[in-house]
Each structure stands twice: as C-alpha cells, then as structure tokens.
Length: 482
Image 1: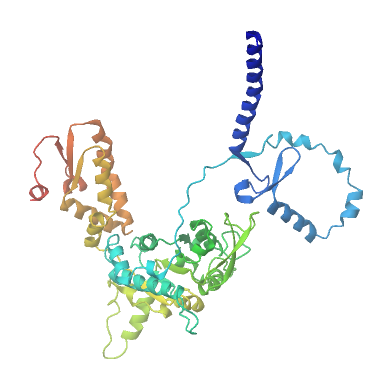
Image 2: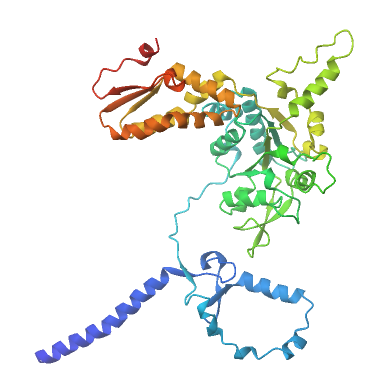
C-alpha cells in the first residue's frame, strides 16, 4: 500500500471516529440530566417513569392518573361536549414552545452514599440515669424536669418494643411541659432527640387550624416528622413530635365566632395523641399538592407538648387562696404572690379552667413544670454547658489567635441585665452580642492583640475591656478579679 493510500485511510478513520466521539459525549451529557413532571415538578428519580407528550412535555404516572380520576368523577357528558369542540388534532401543540422549555429537564443530583441505619431496638435506648446525665451536660438546673423526661422516654420505648402476646398493653406516656419562656423547653427536647438518634419534628401550635380553614391541617405535624425521617415511614413511627406554644390553642373565652384555632384543634389532635393511621403527603405539607400519599401510624410516636401558659399563675393562686382563706387556719391573700415555684402546684383542674379540653389533657398523662431561671442559673448557663455561649465566642476569637476571658463580675452583670428583660436564657445571647460587637470588629485589625478580658466595668459602661498584647505578661484571671 502506498503512502497516499495510508494517509487517506487514516483520515477516513479519524472522520468516522469524530462523530462517534461526539455522539458519546452527547450521550454522557444527556445522562447528567433527568426529566421532570410538567405538573408536580418532581424529577424522574422521585416520580418514576415519565409519559412523554409532544413538544418535550413530560408527565408522571401519578399526575396522569389523578387527571383521569378527576375526569371520571365529574358528571360531564363528554360525547355531547366533543360534538361542539373543534378537532383536537388541529391544535398546534408546537405553539406551546414559547411557554415550555425545549427540553424540560433538570440536572441529576449526585447520589450521596446513604448510611444504612440499623433498626432501633431496646438495647439502643440508654437507661434513665444515662439520659439525665447527658441532659446535664447541656441543660443547667431543671433537675425534676430532666428526671421526669428521662423516665418517660425510657418507658415509652420499652412500650414500643414490648411483647403484646401476654395481653398487657402499656399506655402511651405523652408529656405536657409547662414553664416560663426561655426556661429550656425546646432545647431539652432537641438534646433528647439528638441523644437517642431518632427523628424529631418541632412544630408550632399557633399555625394549626381546623380542617377546611386557612392554615396548617393538624396532620401536617406528622408530615414534618416524615420529612425529618427522610420519608422512611418505619423510622418516623418511632420518632418524637414536639408541639410548642400548646397554650395558644386553649378555648377562646367570650367569643361568638367559631373557634377554629382553639378548641377545634384540641379535638382534632385527640386521634393523633391516642394513635391512628394518618394519610400524609410525601415531600409536601399539603394534601392538595399533587404528590402521592402514605400512611403513618401514630401509635408509637411520642408526643411532647410545651407552653408558657401565661396567666396560669393567677388561676393557681385563686384556687389556693380559696382553700386557705376560710377558718382559723386561713392565710393572707397575698401569700402566693411572690412564690417563684407557683407553677409546680398546678393541677389538671387549673389547666381545664385555663381552657384546655379534658379529653386532650387525658391523653397527656405526664404533666411537669420547669422552674423560672435565677441569676445563679443564668451565670452557669453562660459558662457550664458543652455548647455554652461563652465557649462559642472563645472559639470565634481563637480562630484569630486571640484568647477571650470573662471575669466573674462581668458574668454577674450580664445575668443581672438578662433578669431585667424577663425572657429567660434567650436574653443572654442578645446582651453578649451587643457588647461583643465592637470587640469582634476591632480585633482583626490589630495582629498584636493576644488576649481580651471582659470586665464588669465594660458591661456597666463605666470602663472598657482589658486588652493585652502578644508577648506581654498576662496576669492570672484570679489576680485580675481581686
């Protein structure tokens, strides 16, 4: 074979190879994308095989079936209707091109390696003293509340894994926690769910309304738990639902209108608390969304309700004064006015007078209270927990190679200001943010700063923080406070 023929053959092979490489490259690019449903906007990886319509429109089988079901349920006589309709085949579907993208696709998400979590068993649930010890690392004080919660959770999961063949069925241990704002209700539940490694859904009772009215349906709390469990129904059925602001659904007094966000919500929640099969949408909060429904049984879901219950103290004082104001042993009417633990004397009758329905309270057998925070507790909250606020700020400044310290006088001054705000531990963060703003702004400017000590004078606006340069001999914190 001559050299000219060889060159011609090589050129021909290259020309054949180029279209093949181009087609392979195109196919790999095509693999990076997936079709999405024109109606519910779900990708093919979630909705399943798509039905392709003209003009590159794709519809999932669920949406197509719902469309057919809607047509079948209506009473329209389609044979009479079609006689007066123009020929469908004459409609130019390509006119939809200006509204629908040429290729209705989305880029595929890279699949993460899912950790296969072993099934929860009774051996995975720590004993009550271990649960309380773990709560102690994060929550300051509230010894009685932590003890009650540890025992109730342990008994609940023993109930879940108990044998029903012996005819003895343990009842649910749903909880109602009462405590002033900022006393740590939500934080305790979050810490508990993290410790047990179970799905947790935190919802707000203020957004719930009776079915048929604007707002979230009562079943939406279960759909949030299902989402927290990555749509795994079995994991969700062993989860925890915390409903905050439960006092906001108390019966409205002196109203002539329908109570759609009060007593009606309490009545609607009865079946959830007791245990029932609830149909919830997968991947959406509303049943009206065109997404498939799944059934979740709430029998083994632990419900914890929490609320501040403002003005409940007045109801308790009224009852106590009536009991102690008659006869020779009568007390003064103002005896309980300054009692810091007045909430601990609460009874179910007090809650019923507050506006909670008896049937609702009957499904929350464990009722306990949290104490209001004292100044000493606020000082401990600043520095003791694993995730304490001071430790967070020390870590932030340590990234700039600066050591941050607070003297005892500064901590007392911060706690005193928080007590004045009367919003519990929530006030601490706001106060520290205010005083740390200038320090966090100025320190990155000067690389020579090695340590900052926040003093009581700085908190009380009578002085400034103590700043030490790198290499400068820094006195011990005990010497600074003397």
